[in-house]
Length: 424
Image (cartoon, rainbow, N blue to C red; front, side, top):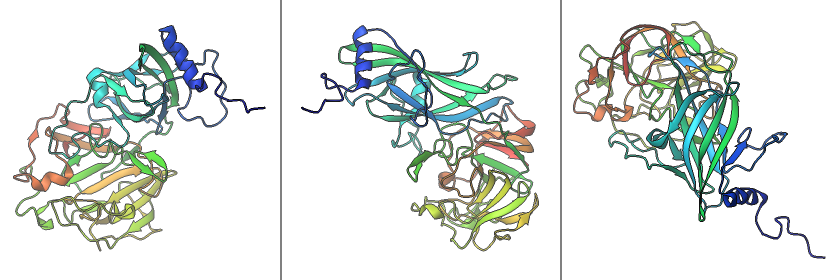
């Protein structure tokens, strides 16, 4: 007897049969789904349906308060089309809701959605820092079998509490040859992190500093998707690059091809919190500024660095340090404010600066990057044009175009936003 075709006589998979039924009905496909990966036991919901898109959250979303005084939630939704390549999906809207009340706390649609979503592996538009990003295609169309990432940066109203559990409602249409068929999915119920952000002292000495590549826009930290050991990570989501700023707003003066022209170079790096040194790397040379160096091996990406464990599952990374300047060894206990090293230009760095972040592991790759705050600082202004750290030395002068900020003044327990100029 011939072996029975598990796909049935139509030759289509059960998934395609379910979606085809929705298309033939010409109606709306409504579904409820859990995590975006089929791991672990799952009990089908009473109204279970096949879904054209899957979704998975890549971190534990952690609420934090920024210098605008508002609570932010910044994380990612990894979305995959379950349809064949011949059948695209038009994604019209993404709503993030309180899973208990189903109240919408943030939405993306139209141009905002187009600028916050891109296929995995595609170059980040405008990421070279020189050319403005072209307008993203609208509407957002996900080709069959394609994986996309949606960058979610939600800002809650002042005083609004973040929900304990989030859910994500996706809506759009399956673009079948017979015509579009609307769909809706409620997917990926996600509990927010129960651990509040670390509240830290500054990682540099008192003075005026520029917070570059900070959250939450189109920066290489915030949107730095990396595939490591077979999994996707955003390992520098909340990292900040710190540059020393002079009285005239300058970050360098003289010859920008010389390390000593940069005000950040050889500035002391200090411990933001007490803890035990768990990783040290030294001996890598400073890169010649200001051009971007060749991509180094992954183990040399952050250059000379010090990693300090300050709480269970929380590590502080101080990176791109000057060779030979490190004052600590692995196993040392350091108090807050102790000098750890001097700012250099080692690793994947083109002008001297301090790369600082919180990590969930002792290694920079792979790791997760949770938010943090600083105990106190004063915002002096902001830099509106997009200046990336690897082209500061390529500007006509080293003077930042600092303009007034709506958040000028003292701040406590806040996270500095991208391109703010502040005084510690």
